[in-house]
Image 1: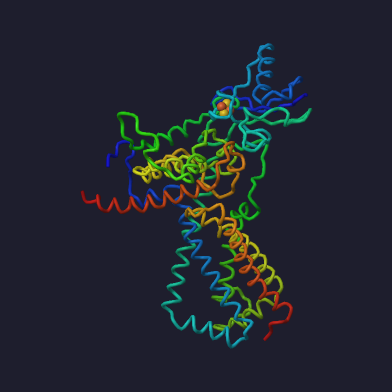
Image 2 (image 1 turned 135 degrees about the vertical axis):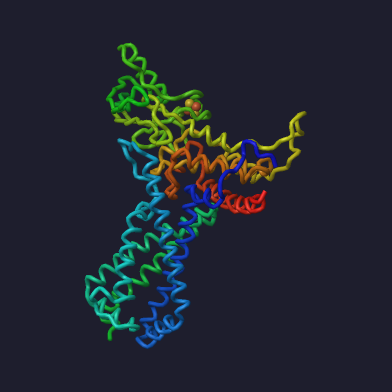
Length: 228
Length: 257
Ligand code: FES
């Protein structure tokens, strides 16, 4: 094929990531991985309702295969790093794209969730760090017993400020997931006038399931439904 | 009717600008918005002042020359309408309107409400050519195109390149414009041979021009005078994704040459 005027230059992988769309696709794919993890994580958490034996056995099972555990951790860490790097780069790009703002600003039509991605992201990030220190490494001074998640959750969530921070973080996570979940389809090029509205509903359903499912645990502990 | 205007006045590219208050006392509701500005400019010239510069050409809503923000909305309050086709009957006596130029790093202000949109021209140029047989005129309908495809291509081709999408986008992204151009040719059989190279090159040029990225807000779709849909952005993303994948394979094949 003749290439005058339509020559394609540069290393493909570099060129892919150079474009804003490439960064967004990286965010979509890593976001999907993280969503998948959050979903599995919730299914694990919900076993608290089946009693201490069940959920503690699940925890021991996860820790019995270090290869799987560390494999998952490495993949998740890589996904988180890529997700955050791309989002910061896009944020900087977008800020630079309009150096002079309007005197009369109109709110864009999209909902609350899409406009809050930017600050819900960092807050969720900070929460994840706290959460890992609290329930994975047990290094924030809250009640912690190795491989006894039942005990750790019950004693942790009895302290209401801890519960409150978990609940708020989950509300933000649900909003973040709602926008992210349907947005990732648009980003990788799936859009259909008939199915996209359904996709949005499905995204809302998943977001609510994850938010409400996780929130139910501290609520159940505070209400005394789940106790030692 | 009487209209109060606050208009961005900026003598040239590098000069600072500011909002200046004007009043147009006798506005006829049947005037178009631009005709109202013509009246204002006539008054300004009679007073020996510099008239307000704004872009316009066809005044029929088809050329894409006109466009500025009216109270923070690109092309003003009427959906699916360019500002030249917006009539004063949609406003009320005594309305206060803020007129501002499109704001984007890629669209520097030239004067008052006029911005430099040559970034769009360079994106189109980066798209390159399509391969067609030259010589005698081809038979009509020699290439059959399903009606559904023809209509979707036409919907995308309706883009007049006015830049309202960039102006409305919180990120000053040109995704709706570039998406429309990529969808327009990418849907048609005539556009297939260069389809993926075109997507790669137009997207690369868009990045180079300093436009922001799409965050799926939909502000562009809401103000587009030609009702271009967000669907074209998804299509652009898809073509870009496929093109990047193919380029990777091509680079491997050609890489040792
Ligand atoms: S002047 Fe041509 S579209 Fe408005």
